[in-house]
Length: 307
Image (cartoon, rainbow, N blue to C red; front, side, top):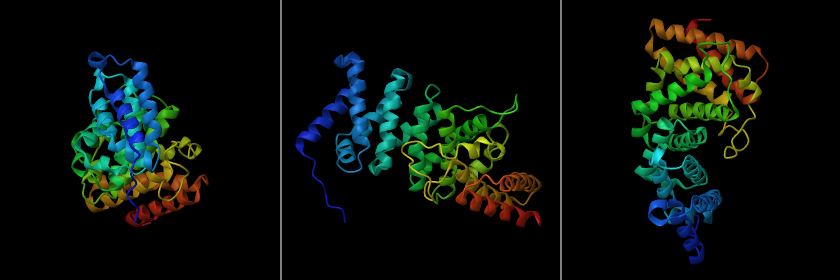
């Protein structure tokens, strides 16, 4: 069992002062924006430390201050919101799971993911926090909200499906966001205390997750960009699969959902998945884990289609 690690008072005071400087309102304390950015950068460094850094960071209530800045929305600088979302994502990824026990952090991250239209970075980092919440089977009541479910469907559809041209061209940041959103859907499939995955399976039209996933399978960039990773995610492994692997694992869950539907719409959806997975398997462009996930998906669909 890990022993309790006492924070030296000087480190704790330093972190408290940084958090206070980062949070202070310019109208109240006249803290220059540059000073707030510098304090935020210093807190980012501490949020990356798995041991003392994260502990002192949460002890100074930096997570609550970051959540408050995110919630201010347009009343706060987009750069400050970016820093705040990155802090929360770093800290929870490094073991700061106290964040999952606090409603202000849940509300801030879900709100940023759904409502932020100015910064792709903030949306990505908020999505990263939601991924860990889903992986640890927390925040179920929030993750299954209609707003969260539909925003996830709309964002994936817009970034994967083209209505007016041959393909959707995504930036580097958009590729990272697509990868993180497919991971979130896969994590939600495994969440035992949340109905979000079933609700995602039921989305249709311009919010249809399955249509977005099929388009992603046919997109050559899904295999070309398999090594594209955010610095927090580290190398690809079974616990942190590639975006394409997450997409395939997610689609298997959707096929099983459609099997239970046992209607014409469900059979049509399964047929579309079978065609896409068969084409992907024949491409010879998959890694070992991706190929296994694709073959499992194909076997599942073919079992239903009677092939």
